[in-house]
Image (cartoon, rainbow, N blue to C red; front, side, top):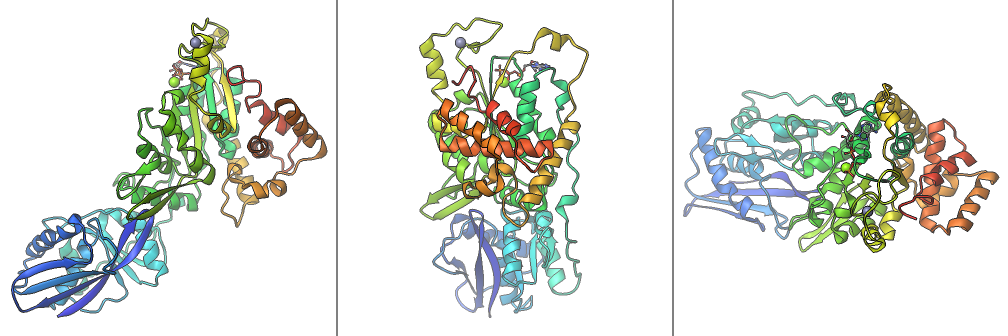
Length: 508
Ligand SMILES: Nc1ncnc2c1ncn2[C@@H]1O[C@H](COP(=O)(O)OP(=O)(O)OP(=O)(O)O)[C@@H](O)[C@H]1O
Ligand SMILES: [Mg+2]
Ligand SMILES: [Zn+2]
């Protein structure tokens, strides 16, 4: 008998439809899969055989042919197992032949249990938008799939369960639709109240978080740069529904969701070590997988000890930082991963760490200092909207009994500033001030005459680039939002300029 069922494949962030055609006929015993399957797909034969055995059904005696259409697209991975299994049973006459509105995805284990697969969320989205009525996914993937409404999602534990359901013997109920924004963010985070003094650096970090701006912290060892950065997750604004869906989708495709973390509801904070490879940072592999920059999507990528990173690795960041997506081309096709991130970096000003320090003498030669800072190229430096000199904490601050302001209090101001931004950008795909495209700057970051005069002064004095100009506008927009004002005033641009490193003793 001949039958066909629907499944999906995955390339990059995109699912694509695959029809599994099955034919069982008399003849020489054989089991073949055609349609450009790779090893993982071919091995599906063994898994399907033992899955059949697990539910007590004998493998058919004759010829079993499977074709994965379209036959000219390479198929890889293990997600076709479930469709192959169900198509075989249908062709054997055990299951109904016609299931044109159903999608089957999942990997079979030898005892007939189902293992999770990558990309279940994007596959469910495609299923819904293509007009399918139901999708069968491994139980492990049911939460990410159930976020998509308008389609019945069945989480399947084993192939026995699927057969019982399709035969109507033990019908399953579809998973209830999950509303991701109802999730509560984790509580146990490092808190800003641990940080003493550092008034200016704290203000810089707050401003950066308010608008999603990139920030570079420069200072001597032990001044608290890592400490500041590690506390950023505690003040980041809540994720919106769209952001949760987008970021969860990246983790789904990367195979990084788990039972304990089925959805990404708190902004990611990724801090790769400075030995990370270019592929690890940006993404790569023969079937390109997302890198750290995409795993930080809608959150923070923290590069501690920035100058220790391989220079060429850092340079690859430049383009994705501007376009907010990474394009990886391979023979098999081109994958595009989102990377809408806030970049946070920390570094010492020189090899010994004490250049410019008020408390200790730097022992480096001028050349050494220049070579050290020179590891960060001008164009990369330019992409940090805020440059903050982190000075050593004075004794009085350390000895004082007073604790710093708590993360909860800072976060409240940041949420208010983000509310203003969400209102401003309603109906667009802009989420925060850092994302305002150049062509909308004039409209969204209007400056009065006196503010424009200050901008002119900055131009005349520091000869700033066009990129710096527009970055100043965005940061000034955030400073005004933090003040609770729709109008950008001279003081806002002054704050932005103060954090732009024009006076930095390190980066001048
Ligand atoms: N402002 C501060 N308030 C309280 N403790 C601080 C402060 N700054 C630094 N410390 C203490 O100093 C330690 C070192 O700080 P941290 O690791 O953040 O320094 P760093 O600037 O990252 O140094 P390095 O350049 O060596 O990486 C912290 O663990 C903390 O105990
Ligand atoms: Mg550090
Ligand atoms: Zn030095």
